[in-house]
Length: 143
Image (cartoon, helix red, strand yellow):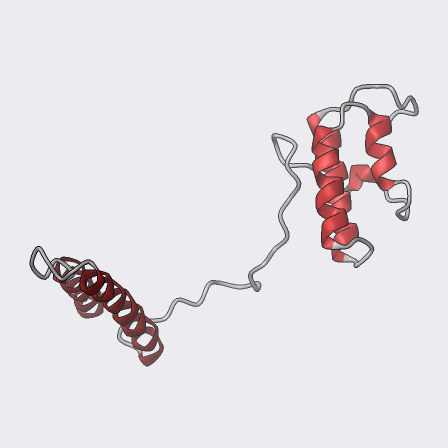
């Protein structure tokens, strides 16, 4: 960055500052509220001096080492574990244990709504519950 604080900031400058703030937040130097406030101010900044003020009380880091994504957005942290994603096979026990409770919760929820609405108009909740069962069974038999 240049030394003149009145020079207008680019989207890349804002992105690098946001990435630096993210690093300091991840290191525990900023609370969530401080991080969110500074992040809002970083994206609203118009000059390099405003961006420097956001980092004034934090340890000095080279902003050039954090590449910004196109559009000035900071890179997102990696939340998933390294390696290929583990997708359960639909015929396996874990897949069934996670799928049927979902169906039961949706079906019971729709059934309760039907009951509280006066149980009129026929059993329309079946138009939701039965296609879900059909899709789940079809998915299980296809694998």
